Length: 494
Image (cartoon, rainbow, N blue to C red; front, top):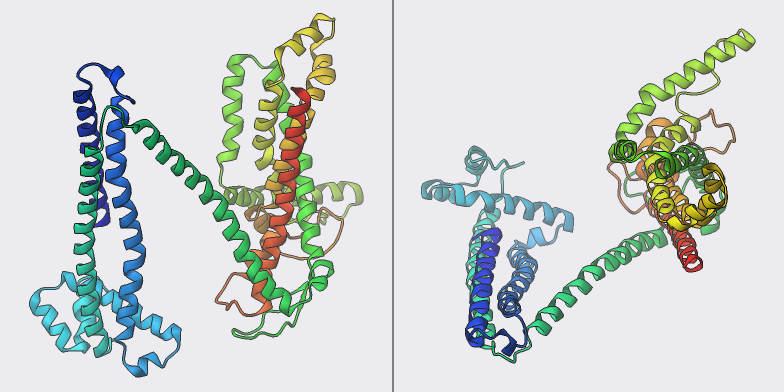
């Protein structure tokens, strides 16, 4: 039985338990609900929870443990000459066995007997059933596939029986526990609290896992390349080595990548901050309700456009436009129609990235400005100040710490952008101040270092994790500082 169908059955048992639990609570109350500790719905929810939760946990544990146990049992039956091969070759053999096993249930008894008797016919028989094989399987693979199919079917049958039995047992025991003074609400709310704690813990543990995985590989990199050469080096030239090589030939200076990241992010903020902030001031203070209801959603549409689309826009429209307009300006001034702005440049990437960031700045700033109490506006206007003076001298100073926090969060978003930079700024890792020339960022080089058929044993590949953990620390510091400013603002304001 499939897991989805099994979950549907468990859910059905839980729904029935809810109805029976509520009915029993009403019956025990005899029409006088005040005699019950909890409302009837809590009693039904108690039965439903203990019908579903243990069965779902059993299903989860079984789904994780059963494939691991079956896989180890199948691998234990490999011939000695196969066990003597590398782990990668054993994995390839097991993958082929799994493919054969998935195709066995689709075969007729005659086809199955033919396949198990003649290994050379396996590719033709299974290929006709939509299960292609890369090569002719060895005879031991056919026997292992049959064992795998049998153990998988047995595991599925046992799982079905156990899950349904546990669900029914949970429903029966929880149903019997219902009594007028039974604290059903406390039990149900305790389970829900545990679920909420578990959900919040998932986010925390995921973050810890991401950091730990990056840090582990970064340590391997720093064992090959000194940390001071990475953090203070001014040349980026990784010089990819052959697969399996562990030499550290090449230079892994972070400074050019960090300079490009900050430079492009700075140009993007120069574009996004004025436009976004002025748009927020207009929508919150000047626009009518009708205009605001139309302009704000249209502006926020920019946030829903994929970044790859912005990259294409920069590559085929903005970059060539800036290149051609620079050639025209140069021709008018000097008579030489050569362009001084490259199609791929810091300006192109920063300008397009700034357009992408406008809705972030405007939406966050609009919410912060709107949160300023109306009494401050009315007091300023009542004292004779104009609307523009009120905005400049009252509203913006009150909202300034929150706006600064929003801008810092937007800056962290700009630092982590990849696709726009790949297409609009190029991949040249160099240090220069000319915004009309190409540069690159940390995120682009992370993609470059992990692209292709490479092994995670050379510094040329492991450097991506060092770059990733560095970028993570930078953005984390920006976000922490932004939250600090926002919280400090709220404490002062209240």
